[in-house]
Amino acid sequence: MAHPKRRTSKARRNKRRAHHAISDVTLAKCSNCGALHRYHHACAECGYYRGRQVMKAAN
Image 1 (cartoon, one colour):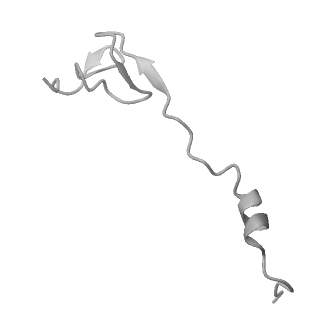
Image 2: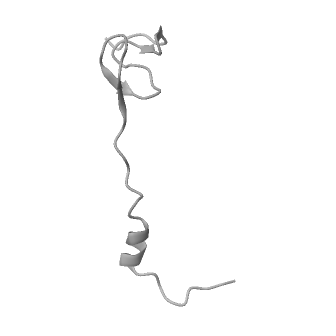
């Protein structure tokens, strides 16, 4: 088995992880009520998803 000759420094390790940041959530506009909701999720305001009511409204 191969063993590392030197310990990886914190700077080198963190440079490798520079692209691991969490990105912002993409929002879509509800076609029924106009509220913003997450992509591929039902609208929390009216309960519609892709033109159909799939759950009861939150109000």
